Image (tube, rainbow, N blue to C red; front, side):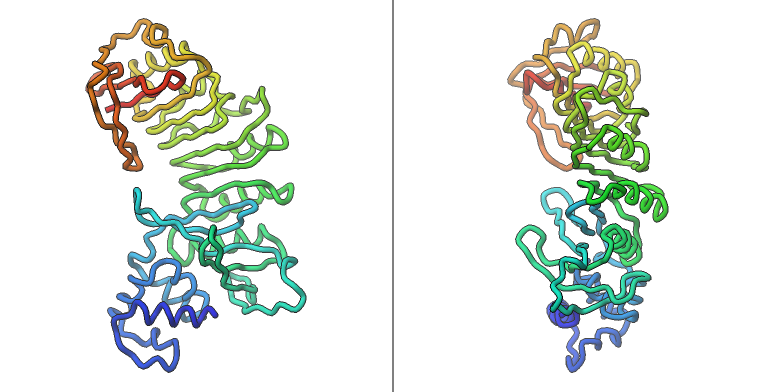
Length: 361
């Protein structure tokens, strides 16, 4: 089935006419027509092609072109998959490439094709499709975490790039998060983005994640620790983007360390006084990278407290300005309060009575 799908994609995208008595005429194409084909088949088909033979894998690994312009995401958790995405803004496309299942899910009478993935020979695979995941290749392993590590390394080899984002989901076994952290450390050292969505059994589960994954650009936490949680060590807030959904544990000292371009804190217990302290901190040159700060506070916004001791200009309510975020999304800002710091201006909006939203122009 893998080969037949490859033949179909080759016919679909190739502008070179060859008699197709064998699917592997692809490998005898001159370099330029071959590169033209690979440029147009897309990353999904590159994965399929790489699994057909060692020769096809060698061609894919050595290829350089637009079909490799992807961000790779590795999901540790119940989803268990390698994903890729390409494009930007509204045109971004995400697709599933490889998923991991345990061999115990196979029926006794089910016989599958096998492929080589990294150092693992005869890995059972089959093509699958469903509405949520789209078309992808299922791989079967005795041990799920071994499989996830293997497809992560395989994706890095095929696309000549590191995994961009690691996603941490619910544990299937007690040592899953530890093994995921070890894989990142041993395979590439750092990741640019860490996305977590799981229910911690104890607060130490979240501490472990924050202390053992070296993320450099983005942290997204949809993890709800206990009511009185406080991180054992100060997390890395020197990144581009920080999203914390359950932000009730964020305190003023954490807020003042968030030197990120974009910060979104939901369900925080921060107060008007905390916002005032942050604003003065920013005016003094602190958190200079901030461009978009949105904080859900624990009380209604009181601008007298927020601007206490701060020089500001209140803009007319019908003054319309457009803010464009990092994703290219436009937001129309009406009125607000402008605060000046050297050569930049921050606007504190009046869009919501329960959110402190600060935009730096």
